[in-house]
Every structure is written in C-alpha cells, then in structure tokens.
Image 1: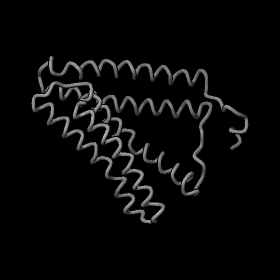
Image 2: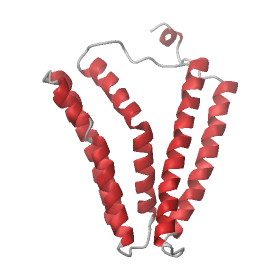
Image 3: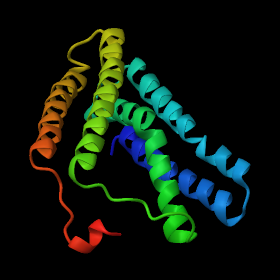
Image 4: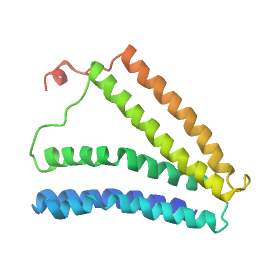
Length: 185
C-alpha cells in the first residue's frame, strides 16, 4: 500500500483521536484549556500530511490518487474542520455528558439552506484543494507524473456540480421529518 495513503488513514484516525481526547479532557476532566489545546492540534496533522506529500512528489515520486486525496483531505479539513469539531462537541456534550440541548435536526427550508451553505463550503474546499493540486502540477512540471492529479481535478469538478444539483433539489422537495413526533422534539 502507498505510503501517502497509509499516512492519510493514520492522520484521519489521529484527527478523531485528538478530537476525542480534547473533548474528554475538556468535559470529563474539567480542563477546558488543555482540551482546547488538543482540539487545536488538528491543523498540525494537516501540515504533516502536506509536508509528507510534497516531499514525496518533489523527490521524484509519480503522483497517485493518494496524493490527490491528500490535497482534498487538507482542503476539506481546513474548510470544514471547525464545523466538524463543533458537531462532535455538541454530540459529546449531549449524548455522553448529558449536558446542554439535544442537537437539532433540520427539516424543510432550514435544511435546504444548511445544505446549500455546506455546498458553498464545498466550493471553497474545492478551490483550495484544486489550487494545491494545480500548484503541485506546476511545480513538478511533468504531465506523466501528475496525471492522477489532473484526473482528480476533473472528477472533483463533476462532484461539485452534482452536489449543487442535490442542493437545488432540497429547495424543490424539502426534507420532511420521518415521524410527526420528530417535529415536536
């Protein structure tokens, strides 16, 4: 298995372990500053991945889909990272610590707008991620070695368009509660 792919898997596992540790330290051990320190380590994981992928490619490696996924991972982490941590924090606080309010489920146009805002963030991640990919393509300056990166840009472009279409459908057919009780929770 490709080193970069293993590193991505390891960093994803480390990402959730750091978040879990940060939340446990923050709420269970009542040490909010130390918990925040752990939560703040997540961008360092992205930096490790960026440096490793760059060193690998600049050292003459042929770009693989794993290298492209590294750029996607970094971009999504930068754009959605705070939102993912907030999501985990709300659920940990409610379901584990039994504190605070139950995280709300959105329906109707509230869900449509939330999904659309997430699509806009997806576009930001796309711009950042494809910027990284184009930067690597430019620096390596060898189309044969960076073919996987170009292919990933094309695929991701299609995915962004499909995600927009899905976003629009939620305005046409808004998401409804499965059960009438869920509306009153």
